[in-house]
Length: 180
Image (cartoon, rainbow, N blue to C red; front, side, top):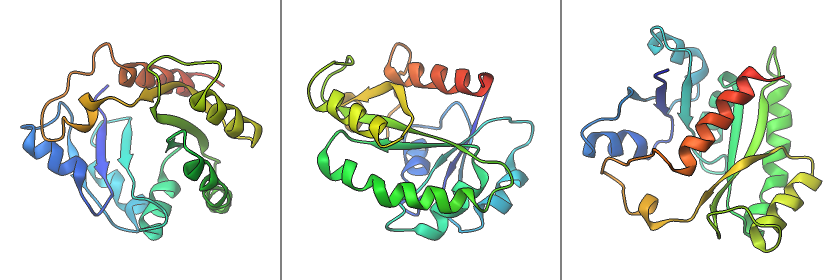
């Protein structure tokens, strides 16, 4: 399955990365507009999967809301840090508001990103964040993305994702689509 990557962040980092890396194995489209939910179908062709790089709600709420109106699955990346956990309350309220505008509810999940350890732990900040988010009613994905310089330093270069947490994440998201 070849997705369409829609870069809806005005910073256009996904599009720029694709340009510097000589392209991605899937198309990348810049669409940083508030009515992205009305426009994206014009670019789908026969694709069944769209991945959005959405901007932060605090910075570009009108664009993020357009993405949320279109996407059937909302993945919220959260670093296991107290400030990030604190910011989840307004995001949760925004997601509730956006659900009311949809004909079918979207599924929402939290992705622990830039975790302290490559493997899941039962104690420590990663486990504490997972527990706190779960207690607050968030669906936390079992896959997490560890903090690795490989990712942060690879901007503009091709990245080999086979055998990484990103492939685990893709598999988990595909399984969620096939599940209940």
